[in-house]
Length: 291
Image (cartoon, rainbow, N blue to C red; front, side):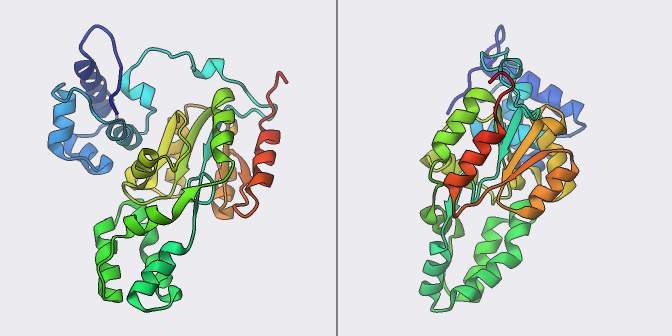
C-alpha cells in the first residue's frame, strides 16, 4: 500500500526529510530508531535518503509509533478534509476514541489453544499456561515471536507457528465494522493494543480489523510498552494529539481502563459476550455537543 504525501520535492524525498527531522528531534540515531521500530538499518536509511519510492503504510506507521508522533506529523502532509478541527466533540468532551483490539475490535476464540493442544495431545490448560507466561514479553517486544514458537515447540514436542494459529481463529467482532465507521465519521479514531509483532498488519491486510482510516495505531510490540504501563498511555496520548480528558478508551480489561482513568481519560468497558449492548453504550457516550 503506497503513500501519497508532500508537494514540491518528490514523494520519497519529502518523506525522507520529514522522517529524518522527526528522528533527530526525538534524539534518536538511525540505529536506535531501527531497534524501536523493528526495521532493518538499510530500510530506514533508504527511506531517509528517498531511495524507496513506495514505503509500506505499515512501515511508516511503525516508525511513527516508535517516534510517538501521528502519521500526519511524520509525513508532513497537508491538512486533509478530515482534520481534527472538523471532527466533532462529545458532550463529555471526547474528541479522540481509542479501541482495544482483542475482545473489542476482534474476537479471539480459544480454538487456537484447542487446536494446538489437540496436535500436541495435551490439555488446553497446559498450552495456555505456557502461552501466558510469555505473552506480555512478546507483546512488549522484549521476546520475539520466533522465541515463543521455539518455547512452545520444545514444551509441546511439535512445530508451532503461533501467528498462524491465532490468525485462523480470530474474527471481526460483530457490529464493530459498522460502529468504527460511525465513529470515524464523527471523531478521530485509533487502535491501542497489546499485541504480538506483525499481527496488526496481518489483520488489516486480511480485513479482520474493521477497514476504516485510523488516525493512530499504538501497537505494543512497536512502541515497546504495554497497557497498563504508564509509558503506553503517554505514547498513545502523544499520538492522539489531544488532552487526556479528550480521549475515550474502549477496552475489555478493567486494569487497562483504571490506568487510563488515572491519566484523565474517559473509559468504557466492552463486554465481548454482549457486543451489541456495549456498542449502544459507546454511541450514547459519544453523543455530540451539537445533537
